[in-house]
Image (cartoon, rainbow, N blue to C red; front, side, top):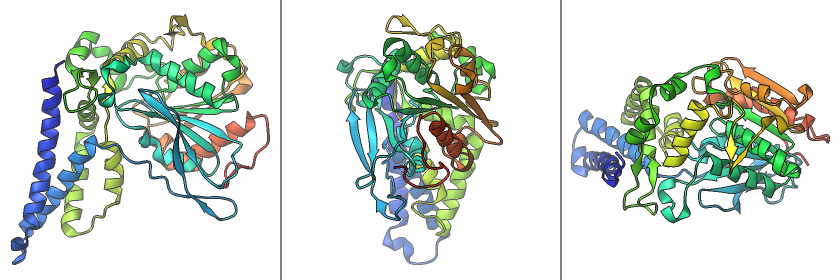
Amino acid sequence: MKYMMTYDLMESARNTNQWLGATARAFAAYPMMSWGANPAMDWLKAWGEVTERTFSRMVMKPDWNIPPVTCDKGKDHPVVVETVLERPFGDLIHFTIPGREPSKRRVLLVAPMSGHYATLLRKTVISLLPDADVYTTDWHNARDIPVSAGKFDVEDYTLYLTDFMRELGADLHVIAVCQPVPLALAATAYLAEQDPSAQPKTLTLIGGPVDPEANATEVTDFGRSVTMGQLEETMIQRVGFKYAGVGRMVYPGLLQLASFISMNAESHATAFRDEIIRVAKGEASEHDRHNDFYDEYLAVMDMTAEFYLSTVERIFKGREIAQNAFVVDGHQVDMGKITTVAVKIVEGENDDISAPGQCLAALDLLTGLPDDKKASHLEPGAGHYGIFAGSSWRNNIRPLVLDFIDANAGKKTKKSGKVVAIK
């Protein structure tokens, strides 16, 4: 499948479905169709509206759209997104709040590169902003990166994280979510050996595959059941002429989305059927629950082929992180060299992506870290999304993480449970 033709064929199918939806909506909205009551036209228009929106979102990067932050004096402050460090495959961005004094908590939120944009963590950012100065990694869509920019694999990802940590300085607290958990751990260990003064104060690891074999899921079972040759042959395609990354080998976002949806196909089909019914009845809205979720869920990005394949081969199959045998830029990283960075593990009891135990395995690797700098939390009843963006995160996990940050920051701050700016 490593051809531009297959990549363009998927894009053509997406574009055709978007056009069909737009055509159905326009046809049903034609004034002549309103001469009398015609339920069929209402259903056609509803189907067209939902279909057009669904397929158009697949190639759009969502906006951060962060609402103003209310500080302790009751004044609303706008949030401005600024680029701190710009790199070919991803930027370090800062959510600045003009008019607010700098917060004592400086947080780097490491977003996943697993098919969705960093805006997947929008709700996480919103929840942290009243209590912290927030930075995040904003990974770029591989289809938009020229081949001349070179490769980007798990080692490059790790080095990006070390550069971002150096840029922000040692008075920093890192929170890694899902896919980047093992690489954030490796980046911290790399700094512990190469540049100890650039290490963060704390490292919070949320639902990531440090040791995928600690508790098997469908994801790990799939990784074991296929060979690298099969993955490269069936998953990798070459970007077509439409985008700046023409010729780059990628794992296409549309192909990833098909995999995501197939895991829960029945529930997704039900969700779209119910939304069409709501639109036909006039009960839907621009920002209803369905649109808020699927506008983000359907927005997918291509990953470089080397990043996807090296993740499967080295993190899942080879378990290099779990075995403390991960090599970055010719240097074998030793997790045992982390001796001063406090580490907290957060897992969800019902996480079917990174099951309980996969992330907790990180603590066993930290042989040089005192026990009083290790912590863990298993959130009862929480799934994968809930531990970083749902009610479990907002009500239970976020306060625990902020308390952990404060306890290891070396200075006193206000109680984390209060939604006020820390000055």
